[in-house]
Image (cartoon, rainbow, N blue to C red; front, top):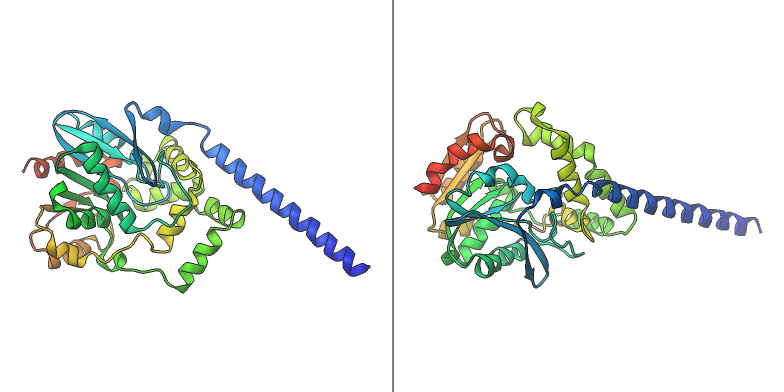
Amino acid sequence: MKTRNKLLTLLILAAGDAAATACINKAIKLSAISRHILENESSSSQCYHWRLGNIHYTKEGNGKPILLIHDLTPASSGYEWKEFSKRLTKDHTVYTIDLLGFGRSEKPNLTYTNYLYVQLISDFIKSEIGHRTDVIATGDSSSLAIMACSNAPELFDRLLLINPESLLSCSLVPGKNAKLYKLILDLPLAGTLIYNIACSRKNIAQDFMGRCYCNPYSVNSRLIDAYYESAHLGASPKSIYASVKCNYTKCNITNALRRIDNSIYLFGGEELDNMAEVMENYRKYNPAIEAITIPKAKHLPHLEAPSRFHDLLCPYLEA
């Protein structure tokens, strides 16, 4: 009888904990998306109906097309290019995409891979742009642009890559621990709670002040709110976090670098550790690559100082 009562008590406590966790997760999501910042910032929203989900993008300006691809952090979106893209629209048709699993695009519960995004980028250029295009990509998205260009060079003109990840980081593969961690993250309650902690407003703000911005005093609350919102929109925002964290979006790009005949420009933040070495390693596989150091900059110079970065980048767009 005592054993039965203990089991009943444990079941009641477990059910209560599960209900409390579910309520916490729901409250976090509702709070994060309540300001509708991304929706209000997008004056030229369009939708590309891709086979795996609807893709949100914007199209502005006139002239030679440019595709802007955001970084691969779970909070990333086309918002990253908000100020910088305005400076390109005078002479270019600027496309800003939210990749599948990011921002306002659909976020289905699946494993996101490098090859999935390579196909998405190529399909998007064929369907929505229809011409050879310049591509500007940030951070871990650089490998996506390189692989897509290697597979279909006729779709691309110049690649301009901002703070690309190291070639060693690109070549990482999911290990046994990664697969177990992804399994935990896929759990509906515990996995969502882990994701909510990892992508809390506080952690996003710390990432901006430590890694993304050279001047931490430039980080404002609206910027953090926009990234926080992006991290919690959609049906399964944690799925991209699990895929990135467990290296499913990685791919060895050294052979692709050797094959590419398109112009490639690397822009590296002066204040980032080892970025000069990273860019030099890229040039070992393709000596035609040009490497440019961005003074007084970290990971997101185009968001922190858009005018200064535009002035630095423009000569390479016009070359």
